[in-house]
Image 1 (cartoon, rainbow, N blue to C red):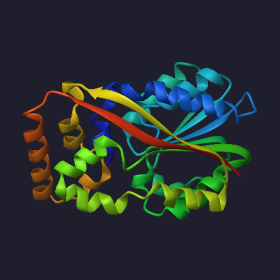
Image 2: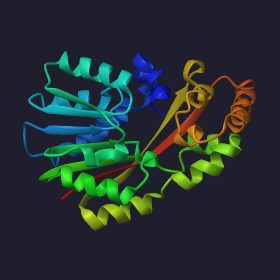
Image 3: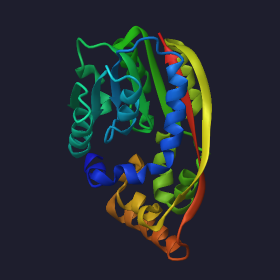
Length: 252
């Protein structure tokens, strides 16, 4: 998957610009539970460090460990954080191999829109528990299946749907695992409308295989799904949609 995220590079913020205000809302919630001024942050699936940059604005004495499997995005994230004089480590690592992180503890662990790529959720959360300080805080941001963009992709991409539907755990499954290992501080859903302009519309999401299920398809099946999306967008110029995602904040 990393090569598909590598292609986004400096355009990653543009691609995700619609969600910035909602991330600020998440950080407002987190602020209630973070009782220290110097925060050691682990940002799993960090992308280009967008969330970490917002965090260090509030906690400027913090240090950040960025974890992503895209070397290109890690370099962009590291450069932007170091320009703010933030101590920064970069781990080019698949999120399914958190076992490789040893001897580290973090005050804040962010898991942002990555759980659909986790092979073994129970082992993943065991590692989160191991890496989280006793009074630390973790947060999960997760796309609900009611997200209209996901629904549209499932509608247009039948081959993708067959694969992805099996890889997309339910919110209840995630909550059950978290409840068994952590104390849940708050759970809520964010919802907001956004417009996908022609430059970043859905056909580009599919072409870059942004969702993990596309990478599992053989080339013929992928081309069929891609052609269906292109036909759809030959008839429309933009999509106005409503994005829903769950926010779960927890501690040990």
